[in-house]
Image (cartoon, rainbow, N blue to C red; front, side, top):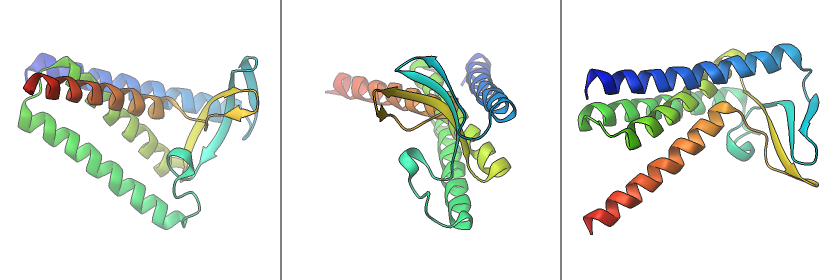
Length: 162
Protein backbone atom coordinates (compact mmCIF):
# COMPACT_ATOMS: atom_id res chain seq x y z
CA UNK A 1 0.00 0.00 0.00
CA UNK A 2 1.25 3.45 -0.83
CA UNK A 3 1.46 6.24 1.73
CA UNK A 4 -1.34 7.98 -0.18
CA UNK A 5 -3.61 4.94 0.19
CA UNK A 6 -2.79 4.61 3.88
CA UNK A 7 -3.66 8.29 4.31
CA UNK A 8 -6.94 7.87 2.40
CA UNK A 9 -7.84 4.84 4.51
CA UNK A 10 -6.97 6.51 7.82
CA UNK A 11 -8.67 9.81 6.92
CA UNK A 12 -11.84 8.06 5.77
CA UNK A 13 -12.02 5.87 8.87
CA UNK A 14 -11.09 8.77 11.16
CA UNK A 15 -13.66 11.17 9.70
CA UNK A 16 -16.46 8.59 9.86
CA UNK A 17 -15.55 7.66 13.43
CA UNK A 18 -15.42 11.34 14.40
CA UNK A 19 -18.78 12.08 12.73
CA UNK A 20 -20.31 9.07 14.47
CA UNK A 21 -19.07 10.08 17.91
CA UNK A 22 -19.91 13.79 17.51
CA UNK A 23 -23.49 13.02 16.44
CA UNK A 24 -23.93 10.60 19.33
CA UNK A 25 -22.50 13.14 21.77
CA UNK A 26 -24.96 15.71 20.48
CA UNK A 27 -27.91 13.34 20.87
CA UNK A 28 -26.88 12.20 24.37
CA UNK A 29 -26.37 15.78 25.57
CA UNK A 30 -29.43 17.40 23.91
CA UNK A 31 -32.12 14.68 24.01
CA UNK A 32 -33.84 12.80 26.78
CA UNK A 33 -33.82 9.02 26.36
CA UNK A 34 -36.71 8.08 24.00
CA UNK A 35 -37.27 11.72 23.01
CA UNK A 36 -38.20 12.03 19.36
CA UNK A 37 -38.13 15.05 17.06
CA UNK A 38 -39.74 14.83 13.61
CA UNK A 39 -37.43 15.85 10.77
CA UNK A 40 -39.56 14.72 7.81
CA UNK A 41 -43.10 14.10 9.02
CA UNK A 42 -44.26 10.57 8.29
CA UNK A 43 -40.79 9.36 7.33
CA UNK A 44 -37.84 10.41 9.52
CA UNK A 45 -37.35 11.33 13.18
CA UNK A 46 -34.36 11.84 15.41
CA UNK A 47 -35.15 9.50 18.30
CA UNK A 48 -32.67 8.83 21.10
CA UNK A 49 -32.59 5.18 22.10
CA UNK A 50 -30.00 2.80 23.50
CA UNK A 51 -29.51 -0.63 21.99
CA UNK A 52 -27.88 -3.20 24.26
CA UNK A 53 -27.75 -5.75 21.43
CA UNK A 54 -26.68 -5.61 17.82
CA UNK A 55 -28.65 -5.15 14.61
CA UNK A 56 -32.36 -5.79 15.10
CA UNK A 57 -31.80 -6.28 18.84
CA UNK A 58 -29.62 -9.40 18.39
CA UNK A 59 -28.54 -10.63 21.86
CA UNK A 60 -30.26 -7.72 23.60
CA UNK A 61 -31.65 -10.17 26.18
CA UNK A 62 -28.25 -11.72 26.97
CA UNK A 63 -26.42 -10.76 30.14
CA UNK A 64 -24.46 -7.49 29.99
CA UNK A 65 -21.19 -9.33 30.68
CA UNK A 66 -21.76 -11.79 27.84
CA UNK A 67 -22.87 -9.04 25.42
CA UNK A 68 -19.94 -6.81 26.25
CA UNK A 69 -17.42 -9.62 25.90
CA UNK A 70 -19.00 -11.06 22.76
CA UNK A 71 -19.40 -7.78 20.88
CA UNK A 72 -15.95 -6.54 21.91
CA UNK A 73 -14.30 -9.74 20.70
CA UNK A 74 -16.25 -9.79 17.44
CA UNK A 75 -15.33 -6.15 16.80
CA UNK A 76 -11.66 -6.64 17.60
CA UNK A 77 -11.53 -9.73 15.36
CA UNK A 78 -13.21 -7.79 12.52
CA UNK A 79 -10.78 -4.88 12.94
CA UNK A 80 -7.85 -7.30 12.99
CA UNK A 81 -9.07 -9.08 9.85
CA UNK A 82 -9.54 -5.79 7.98
CA UNK A 83 -6.06 -4.60 8.91
CA UNK A 84 -4.54 -8.00 8.09
CA UNK A 85 -6.30 -8.02 4.70
CA UNK A 86 -5.07 -4.51 3.92
CA UNK A 87 -1.47 -5.34 4.81
CA UNK A 88 -1.28 -8.80 3.24
CA UNK A 89 -2.99 -7.83 -0.01
CA UNK A 90 -1.44 -4.37 -0.29
CA UNK A 91 -4.85 -3.00 -1.19
CA UNK A 92 -4.52 -0.03 -3.49
CA UNK A 93 -7.93 -0.07 -5.11
CA UNK A 94 -10.15 2.69 -3.70
CA UNK A 95 -13.21 0.49 -4.39
CA UNK A 96 -11.89 -1.80 -1.64
CA UNK A 97 -10.00 0.68 0.50
CA UNK A 98 -12.88 3.07 1.24
CA UNK A 99 -15.52 0.40 2.00
CA UNK A 100 -13.05 -1.33 4.34
CA UNK A 101 -12.44 2.02 6.07
CA UNK A 102 -16.22 2.51 6.45
CA UNK A 103 -16.68 -0.94 8.01
CA UNK A 104 -13.71 -0.42 10.33
CA UNK A 105 -14.92 3.02 11.47
CA UNK A 106 -18.46 1.79 12.03
CA UNK A 107 -17.30 -1.17 14.07
CA UNK A 108 -15.05 1.05 16.19
CA UNK A 109 -17.78 3.67 16.63
CA UNK A 110 -20.17 1.16 18.13
CA UNK A 111 -17.38 -0.40 20.21
CA UNK A 112 -16.65 3.03 21.74
CA UNK A 113 -20.33 3.22 22.75
CA UNK A 114 -20.20 -0.22 24.35
CA UNK A 115 -17.19 0.81 26.42
CA UNK A 116 -18.72 4.17 27.37
CA UNK A 117 -22.35 3.19 27.96
CA UNK A 118 -22.54 -0.61 27.88
CA UNK A 119 -24.83 -0.25 24.86
CA UNK A 120 -25.02 1.57 21.53
CA UNK A 121 -26.59 5.00 21.04
CA UNK A 122 -29.04 5.00 18.11
CA UNK A 123 -31.01 7.98 16.87
CA UNK A 124 -31.86 7.74 13.17
CA UNK A 125 -35.48 6.60 12.97
CA UNK A 126 -36.97 5.86 9.54
CA UNK A 127 -40.60 4.85 9.17
CA UNK A 128 -43.62 4.83 6.93
CA UNK A 129 -46.94 4.94 8.74
CA UNK A 130 -46.65 2.56 11.67
CA UNK A 131 -43.78 0.55 10.16
CA UNK A 132 -40.45 1.56 11.73
CA UNK A 133 -37.05 0.40 10.60
CA UNK A 134 -34.99 -0.28 13.75
CA UNK A 135 -33.24 2.92 14.84
CA UNK A 136 -29.60 3.17 13.82
CA UNK A 137 -26.65 5.57 13.82
CA UNK A 138 -23.78 6.79 11.62
CA UNK A 139 -21.62 3.78 12.54
CA UNK A 140 -24.36 1.36 11.46
CA UNK A 141 -24.78 3.30 8.22
CA UNK A 142 -21.03 3.16 7.54
CA UNK A 143 -20.95 -0.60 8.12
CA UNK A 144 -23.95 -1.15 5.84
CA UNK A 145 -22.66 1.09 3.04
CA UNK A 146 -19.16 -0.37 3.28
CA UNK A 147 -20.46 -3.95 3.25
CA UNK A 148 -22.71 -3.20 0.27
CA UNK A 149 -19.83 -1.83 -1.80
CA UNK A 150 -17.54 -4.70 -0.75
CA UNK A 151 -20.13 -7.20 -1.96
CA UNK A 152 -20.61 -5.30 -5.24
CA UNK A 153 -16.84 -5.22 -5.78
CA UNK A 154 -16.47 -8.94 -4.98
CA UNK A 155 -19.27 -9.85 -7.39
CA UNK A 156 -17.71 -7.65 -10.07
CA UNK A 157 -14.30 -9.27 -9.61
CA UNK A 158 -15.83 -12.74 -9.61
CA UNK A 159 -17.60 -12.00 -12.89
CA UNK A 160 -14.31 -10.72 -14.38
CA UNK A 161 -12.57 -13.97 -13.33
CA UNK A 162 -15.13 -16.14 -15.13
